[in-house]
View 1 (cartoon, rainbow, N blue to C red):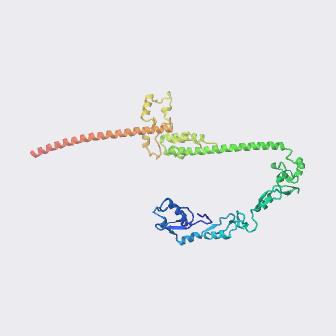
View 2: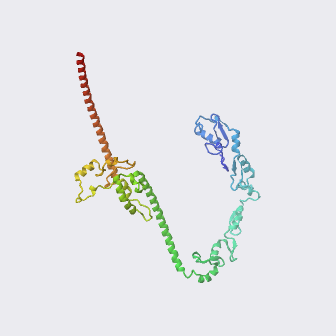
View 3: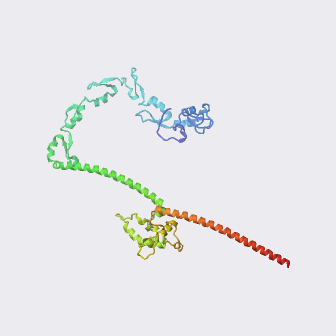
Length: 432
């Protein structure tokens, strides 16, 4: 299949769905009116006798030439000449004539009948074959006639004249001569440090004693060595800083995930009005907020995260748990503490449930929990308490059902007894 270099975007209606290129020799199916390149659909029918679009049965006999309008549209598409070096652009149907007669970069047979090679059309105008070998008069190497001029300009044995000292030398010795030519312009050896002198190589010896940088060349060498070491150290430190920044970004992502997982448990006390907290917690928040704000300030003046972050969600510790034996406060025995923890391990000893009914409770206020354990332990305690509470509620429900059933039976028996007495009274009234 011919390949074209299109210069403009093509309408999608002129694209073959098999090769995804503009139609070439388009044909259309009679059954479903789908259009394809002839070579594309013939190759597809070798694998499956179905239309590639709607999978209807299709054979070669079911193909016909596409509508002339489609052929005209694809033939008018602009393409670029495929010959290397030619920038000619024309319609696709005119490209064949351009390559056949006009393109100067297309390959044609060599004009010399004895030569079997090809040349570009613009090189075939002469009578002599460009592939005829010729011998260089300088290096005596054999090259093609078409490459002779280029070889003469780069021949290593040809003679050239130095542009600085006008001496004649071989082209191959040009680089070594420039490295020692006394008339070649050079800069001072201390130009990298700031010396602006520039002149011929023969004048460098007279300049060196007067160069202000020559007297401190030892310091400059030491400075260059130290500068190189500092640059290497800076590169190493920069790599470490980049690695640390990557770790910080990873830690920030982990912290955001933790904050999202904690939900309402993670909130700074300053972001939550103390009036929304339970009464017995407000005094604790007021007493700890000043200490927390002063102890969690960083060197940049921004508050840092610390243990006080969760203080607004927890009640103060029980006086009984912090009082000493000689303080006069009642102490719980170990057996009482074990019984209390067994019943509800997350409820503090001095929590009064009536405090939650004496006022409107905030939407996200949680029940006081034991501060002597971690958040995970507190959540586990709350979960166990919820299981115990659920079991208790279910048991209470069953007891209520049994009591209701018994009471219903008793009431039914009393009603039957009353009915019997009423029947007896009715019989006596009827006798009298």
